[in-house]
Length: 90
Image (cartoon, rainbow, N blue to C red; front, top):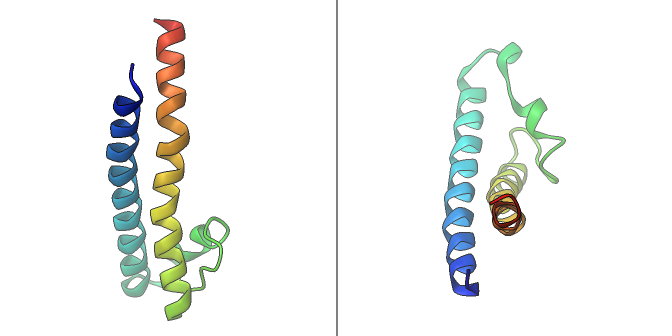
């Protein structure tokens, strides 16, 4: 497997995961705005997203950026790990 193949996989997975996590974050925030307080998800997001604060613009953008970056983090570490173990296991 060549480096360009790995790079292409990282790019594809990075964009796919980042957009998926960003959309999930936006849906959870929207749900939190319309759902009763007992169903809010912001308490689950807060420990995972540094700078996230419920119902503030800086907190909203910090959460959105953090969600997006988690997708790239997973892709950058995950794709090479999957390729390594796929090669080792066969």
